[in-house]
Length: 325
Image (cartoon, rainbow, N blue to C red; front, top):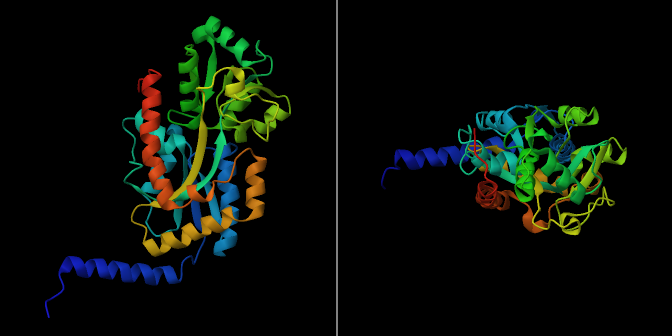
């Protein structure tokens, strides 16, 4: 009988240890890194899924907000974490796709550095402005934007964030680039819009629904083909005359690449259980998101989506004339 090679032995040992470890996983709380400050759509989505997954796993998932660099700081934290399943991350269209083009020195490679657990929500983006902005619909806004030019100020949560890339797409289409004001998170952005310190932003419906419903900000257009159930009075981009403006932000969960497969399987099943929970679905709908269809779920589907979206947003940003710093 031939001796087992060292490499093969190592693989078998790793698989055996991973399976044994998974039998008792999880034994303690899990940390979910949300790469933005508390208060925005990503944070809300993460907390809803953390509760749903905690119920399925029988252990608490603690949300930790690690903002900075348009989500790159928190995402890198997940990449460098111990690959034991006790640290997972939340990412979205911006941090896992557009950031590759927006930030050439991105400290992580979305295609190679992570093991994906699945998409958990999708929500359209929306253009909104301060309540006293001198425009009440998209047509009027475009006229004002072209007159104000760089005197128009729009905030976002950092280069590569969903709010940033949506603005780049939108203002590239209407050919009226504003002056961008970066913030560490949505909370700071919307507070300055409410205080009329800046003109507006291009964030998710889930982020700004409450402020729009309360009249604290003025919502102009939703970047989708269908109206949002959360803000049904706001016209779609198609209705408003800018059908090319389509920007739905998907959000998903991932773990460090070397996390043992048996552990990944447990986490992926917990994600599925959470998405099948009617209460989770209801809460996601309330904040303006939709639960992904069955064919959009799971780690393999998310891995494919990330790869496709990197190319998709590279094309959009290049056509918009974006030049990284």
